[in-house]
Length: 124
Image (tube, rainbow, N blue to C red; front, side, top):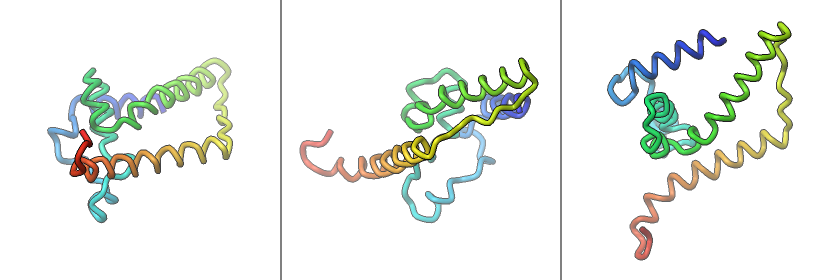
């Protein structure tokens, strides 16, 4: 698992999605023409790996916000596996899943409304 994560990080670092076209496009955006909550996530992670924080936030704020939590969870799993030779199952409550889905839906709605609101007077 660690080797796969390092290989993916190296792939993103060596072949950023902004310069290489072999990354698949978002099917949601391709079919419907709107941004899903994950659109730009790959570009955001590549920018994070390159140390370009502002660009990463512009690409996908949700991916940038969730990256530390995912990294901490992965580190905890790796520590548990190396220390006790035991892969734990992280308990994820249904409430936490509902909260994450709600945040993702609100984020997706907000990022698609922002360009529409630019046409209104008084909106910056």
